[in-house]
Amino acid sequence: MTIRSFRQAFAAGLALAALVGAPALAEEAFLDVGKQEPITILINSSPWYLGFESVVDLYTEQTGNEVKIDATPYGGVLEKARNAVRTSQSPYDILNLDSGWTIEFYQSDVLRPLGEIVDGYEMPKEVFTCGGSYFWNAEKHFRTAEGGKLMAVPPNCNTHVLVYRKDLMEKPPATWDEVLSSCQKVQDKPKLYGFATRGERGNGIHYDFMPFLLSYGGSIVKDPEAGDYTVTINSPEALQALEQFIKIEHGCAPDNVAAMGQGDVIQLMSAGSAAMVETVIAAWPNYVDPTRSAVVDTVAAAPMPEGPSGRGVAIGNWHFAIPRNIPDERAKAAMAFIQWFLTEQAQTAYAEGGGIPVRADVLEKLSSQPKFAWMAAYKTNLEAGKQPLGFAEGAAVEQVIGLRLNQALVGEMSPAAALNTAAKEIEGIFKQSGRNTGMLDPLSE
Image (cartoon, rainbow, N blue to C red; front, side, top):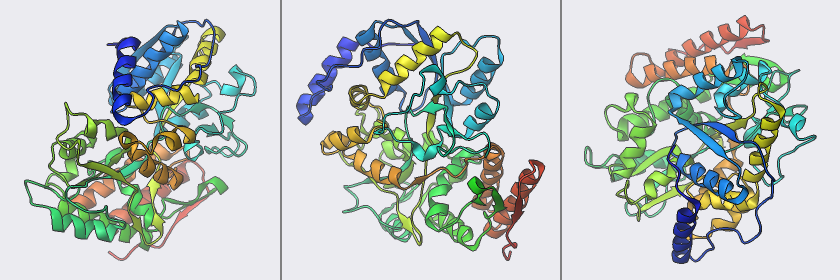
């Protein structure tokens, strides 16, 4: 990997801090973790990666402990993680797992509960639990802190934010109805699109549709934590949400929105070709980097718009986990890094390096500074956030929904038919798993 020296990063941080009137790093001493074995971290090369790289450099400078990073494109991380835990000894000491992948690893007992490495370890109370996905309750087969073991910690708690151009609108829309009216009013296609979010089939459209679904009072499953796997994705509320999603996408996004991925949406805003986009907060550095963005001085972040049931936010976070198949000394070294990383001092440096901090006190401390104005919207969304897929079949369910939503967006199926089809297929998945399941009466097509 390419590592910037800490001294260069520190000097740059000081210069930037002078501009915004804040110290580059917390004045308190950093956590002393002692001499540790070298560790290797498998991580995705996502928009927030550079912020993480900078804080790893800082850890190395502060402690003298060696950290190697295998920064891998998103599509290759899961395969590397699976291979790592299935070998006699993992080449990685920390695996960065996407939220939808975690249950496969939790159920397979290939990760070490963190309280077994450092006896009784608990995350600092200031660290966000991101909907409880870092815990695994083996009896319920569900990710929940209640009765669950701590299996991982957050490198970020990704949520959506509404990114908008403050030079084009006086204030951000507060509801989805206002999003529709605002995007139609301000746009000038194809020079300027009013709004866009991902429409590509699979994880992209599924995750970006979740704020609509949740804000309209919809859900995928009735009460999975309590063992009720009745499928509810084809409720009238879900239909309203999907119809609004399609109306906004067709009315304000580019014609190829059904094929647009995260990079496409980010580029649309960064190039000054969109008035509003819905993206994860981890994309924020792209909008304020003058080498990559034409909207540095005009971009702002807002809480997600509300629907009839309030604000809907789906958390799509990442998980730092430690594989079982490494020697104890390496596991302890991985925990030393994790404990250091979650401190207030390290999280402040992480934010200043372009990362997304996971501590409430750091957000509160920094959010009043112009550079970190986005943190207020992020915190508001995080407080409303939910984990829609906390069950073992989550990955299969996501693929079903992602396919059917995309078909509705491109017009291959009506919204009602897409949701009915998804519900029937998801019920089949749960039946195969032996769940207590069923489905709602079909929507009228």
